[in-house]
Image 1 (cartoon, one colour):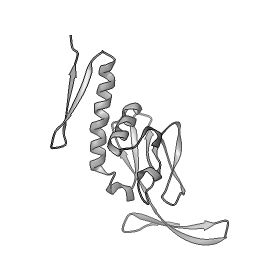
Image 2: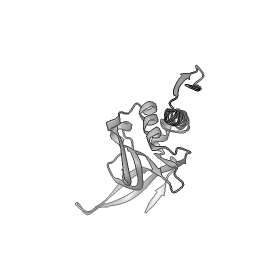
Image 3: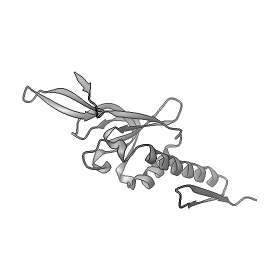
Image 4: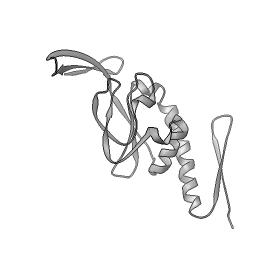
Length: 163
């Protein structure tokens, strides 16, 4: 039986079949964040930029795979794009993005990890994802896209190559 504590952590009694005794694990539940990200390749590039992850650290799956918690326990949540906990931080959970039926990706971020990968990070990810989506679309027309980051965190995107 699981209970949600004041901190948003879930305390669950787990039966360990190898030792047949009860253990108590504290697990952080996953929160879903609806996004407008539709292009997986743009999201992939934005994740490398905003999370400083390498190409090898981001998994992309055609069939969704399970996420894992900081104990290494498999969670019920599944995702198509995954950053494994070892690359997220100390005592972290996997971060995932699941592709929904409408074509958008929904972020799966644990409450524990939402301090670092919360609303502000999602905002930066959104800006980077938009830039890469525009860059991809404009490249199809032979145009060049450049970005200038402002001191206030905003970005300006310049498209050149119009005839």
